[in-house]
Image (tube, rainbow, N blue to C red; front, top):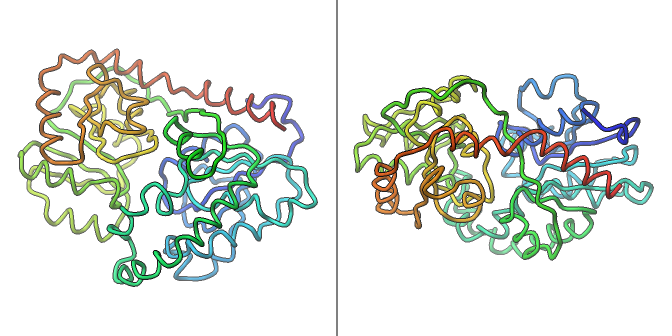
Length: 375
C-alpha cells in the first residue's frame, strides 16, 4: 500500500528491456505493485506477462528495428541514446531497475525542465563493460557474429565505459541489490549507494518430501554456467533437472550432450517450478552473481543451496546451515561440495525461515522510506 506521501505524484518505472522474465523483471513487478499507477519505459518490449496489464508501456526507436528489436543485445551501442531520447519531464519520481543502459534516462534533455529525482535500483554495473568484460569476450552470445563482436568490442570499450560512467554521474541516488553490487558501484562509478535487498514471493505450503534429484533454474546464457553443471553431472551420474525459458544455441548444445541422468524442462509454470524446487535434494547455484533471488526462493521452499562461494551467494546462503559453498567453478569442486552436502543433517524449517527473511514488507518499507527521504 502506498504511503500518502506518494498520492498525486507521477511515477515512471524504467528498465533496460522486457524480453523474458528474470531477476530485474521481478523487481519491476514488485515496483509496479508498490506504485500501481506508474508508467513503464524500456528500450524494447516483447514480453507477455500479467504484470504489464493496465500499464502504459513506452518503448524506444529500437522497438521498430526488426533485428535489434528481437535481438536486444545487438543494440548495446545504441541503447544509451535510446534512453536519452525519452521525455520524462511530466514525472515526479523516476525509478530504474537496471543492470545495463537504462540509467541513461538521467541524461535526457527533459532534466533541464524538471526537478524530478532519478533513483536507480542497480542489479550490477554493466557486467560486459566492467566486472566480467574479459569473460564476455570469451563467451559472446551473438552466434555467427561472435568473431565480429570480438574484433570491435575491444576497440570500443573505452568509449562505451565512458558513456556508462557519464550516465552514472547524473543519477541522483543509487540503490544496490547487495553488498557486492554496492562495492562495484563504488569501484566503477565512484558513487555511494544504499543496499536494499529484493524480496521473493513466498510460496505457501508445508515442507514436502525430498526426491532423488538436484535442480537448477536459470536463463541458459554463458555466465550462468549450465555447462559446468552438465559436465559435472555427466561424470558423476547423479540425477539433475535443469529448467530454463531461454531457447539459445547454448541451450540446444548442452541439451544434446546431456546424458540420460540430466533432464531439461523448458518454460515450466511458476507452480511447477516451485514444486520441483521444493522436492529437490538441493538447488545448484554455479555462477558468480551479484545477487540472485532463485536461491532465496529455494531456501524459502525448504531446499538447501549448493553455491559458488563468492559474491552474492555469500549474502543469502549460510554455509553448513542453509547450504554448502564450493570454492571454484570446477567440476571437482562441485563434486566435493556434493560429498559434504551428503554428510549434513539438514534442518529444513531453519532453511525455510532463512529464505523468508527476504520479505515484501521489508522491501516496500525500505524503498518507500528511501524515496521519501530524498525527494
